Every structure is written in structure tokens, then in C-alpha cells.
Amino acid sequence: MDNEKRCQNKRLFSTEIEARKERLYVEKEYNKKFRIYNCNDCNGWHFSTIN
Ligand SMILES: [Zn+2]
Image: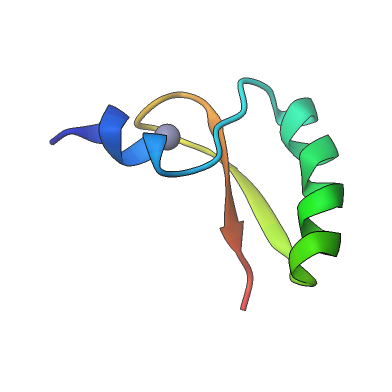
């Protein structure tokens, strides 16, 4: 229902390129792999972790 608020709890990027750049840093920081996906709720880009 309140999709915009739900998205505020995640890292949000306006472009895929921006998300890809940031992913390099967070993968090092957390020592994990992250997937980038286009969000249908806010039309932005978020990370999700890969298990
Ligand atoms: Zn979103």
C-alpha cells in the first residue's frame, strides 16, 4: 500500500549506472554479492543480496 515509504528503507538510485558504481563499494564493504533491480514501486533501482 505505502510503497514509497517501504522504498525509503532501501538504498535508492535513479539510474542503473549509479547503482553499479555504488555496488563496487558495498560488495567490498559487506563482502557479499548484490543484485541490482529496477523497482516497480518507485521506478528507481535498489540492491538485493544474493545468497
Ligand atoms: Zn523502490
